[in-house]
Amino acid sequence: MKKRVGLEPEKVVREVVTRNGGDQSRLVQILREVQDALTWLPPAALTAIANTLKISRAHVEGVAGFYSFFYMKPVGQYRILFSDNITDRMLGAPKLMSMMSRILGVDGTGRISGDGAASIDVTSCTGMCDQGPAILVNGMPITRLTQDRVRKICDLVSVRAPVSEWPKEFFEVTDNIQRKDRLLNSRLEPGAAMRVALGMGRDGVLAEIATSRLRGRGGAGFTTAAKWEAAKKAANPEPRVVVCNADEGEPGTFKDRVLLNSYADHVFEGMTLCAYAIGATQGFLYLRGEYRYMLPQLEQALARRRTLGLLGRTIMGVADFNFDIEIHLGAGAYICGEETALIESLEGKRGTPRIRPPFPVTNGYMGRPTVVNNVETLAKSAAIMIAGAAGFSATGTSQSSGTKLLSIAGDCARPGIYEYPFGVNITQILEDCGAHNVQAVQAGGASGMCLAPYEFNRRISFENVPTAGSFMIFDISRDMFEVARNFVHFFAHESCGFCTPCRVGTSLLKNLMDKMHDGRAANYDLSEIMRLNNVLKTSSHCGLGTSACNPVETTMAKFMHEYVKRLQPVDFEPAFDLDQALKTSRQLTGRGDANAHIHAERETW
Ligand code: SF4
Image 1 (cartoon, helix red, strand yellow):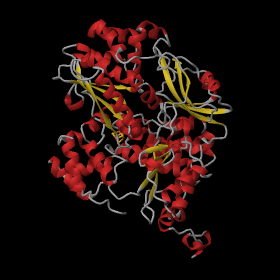
Image 2 (spheres, rainbow, N blue to C red; image 1 turned 45 degrees about the horizontal axis):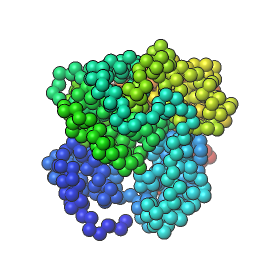
Image 3 (spheres, helix red, strand yellow; image 1 turned 90 degrees about the vertical axis):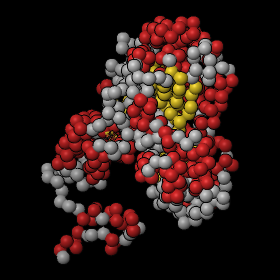
Image 4 (cartoon, protein in one colour; image 1 turned 120 degrees about the vertical axis):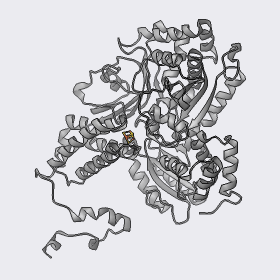
């Protein structure tokens, strides 16, 4: 790979670290900025970062190695990542990836082409499921990939055209809003919700949010007012912190993408509102690395709000109300969607979930009281201030007030964003999005619920079918075993590796599902899966591990025939298959010829 003239790692590191105030807690951002300049993180850069920040090199390398979007080996000039979510696969991603790999002369495992031009690999869901197949090229999303588009991309790569000069339509990401309700129909003049809040006072805001019965939209459904109240009352030293969790990495969800793109003022106003209510002075928007393309427009929105006096010192003339928001970019780690892992990442560390308690509301970012709320929750809190809590509370069900945004993808005519009052049933949703011959709906992402047709009268709500927003549809042509296998691969890839049951268990589970896929499994393997499920559920440190087997468990319960048809007709583990065991070696050495196989007749040797 050609070295870029004038960019010596040490010099780049000095500039970046200085720009970041020599702050160790900004290590993830420092690594990103250094990589932006050098295209990867060479050993000299890691050493220079460690020396400049006065921290151990092992720590720097440990952090860099944790995040998928940091590269400690050279990468192609064009780093192409195919979204590997099941919906992208259903839209033909694997074939398109093979085609592109063939044309560009790479093997699709991240290795660089001989001329140094390109590397191709897969990545977890990029949040473009409604307009897939999707890829990231040097971090920029390209949607609606077709064979024609693949050919054009390969032509551009072959002449080394800068990505900034590629056709604009390649990078078009549409909101795809199909159904609006209370939130998406609401309009917000910047500052309007805050004016209402200032009229109510801090306690009045907390009371209004409590009256709305708003619950967190990120998955757990914790009562928003209770969380804000707890942070406000926390005895820990100030300043308090508000974090917007925009790390939506659950496969199949993309609603936060749309809110950040078209309702950013709702989100920032919600953060400011929370800051006012709890007395916070510092805010972070943790933006997932896959949504980096939105960074400039979000920075502009923040700058506009500062100009309007809605961020900064003495907000809206209130003497003791100082609050500002900084955007922190993630780097491809699903686990950072878990609030304590996210806080670790904000502090410049590996995104390892913390032991709770203590909870972030008392001991969060830098040990300070911290509210971490989902994008949708914060946008809704701003809308509640404008429209009033009573109407919001009167919408939905007894335990789930208001509306829910669903990211609908998969086998339907109209994928996109749908906003419904809580309590809508699955049948209604399927009708609205034009889904036919549906055999299953996966609500809540990979770790969520797999619903069969006899359950389509169930309702979206915290008490019935909870979902953070993901809603994937599978018609009768789909193989639900392969759906589960895709999710299991996802968990194995995204396990942070901190605890052994999950680190080892998700890999063993993946191997068992692959064994079944290859037709080498027997009844014994089904019971092995159940044993593993038990270990994962009872011994994992966080929710990723405890729910990693959910897709297998639920598809087994409802689509057992897809598993049974793959089993060998024996009730003991099949003997060791030497030919299969050599499969990986054949792939690595590029051997596909007959002599690279162990044939049955040779067993007579
Ligand atoms: Fe990490 Fe998995 Fe353990 Fe969670 S359960 S801490 S993701 S290894």
